[in-house]
Image 1 (cartoon, rainbow, N blue to C red):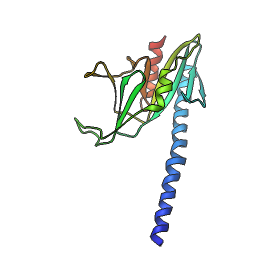
Image 2: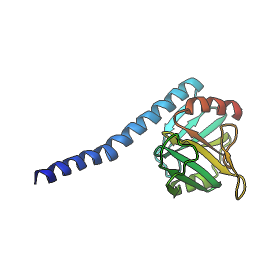
Image 3: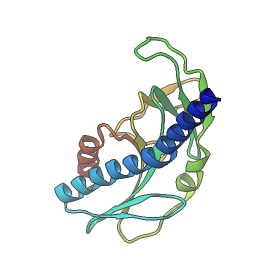
Image 4: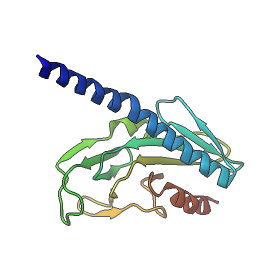
Length: 177
């Protein structure tokens, strides 16, 4: 009977951490990063409660719509077409030629990927991959893959890792002007 109480107590603690603490920490880290970037680049940052995107960064010339995609590490994001993105994860880190055993389609991004936002300013759509993704790949044709970098996009959408978002955003801002 004592074992059952210990087990239930441990499960309650795990559930509280997983669904209570981790989302709060994630939101604070992302908000702090975007606030830091907004101060550096003289942008306004807004956290929005919208189904398609989570944050907006805005200046006189550009609007950056940011959608957060949370992934577990190690992971790889593959862009199959404009509205179909695939997430694969799992396996051992630093293992050349490894295969990711788990895969799912990222259905929560579909509306963000499809929507065409209207504004007199230049619109940039960004998928912020939290915490880190090892590779972001894009299908060129049926059998060729190409790595997506900051200089290239995936059908008009920039995919950036949280870990190097500040440096990537500086390059992105230079390229947008």
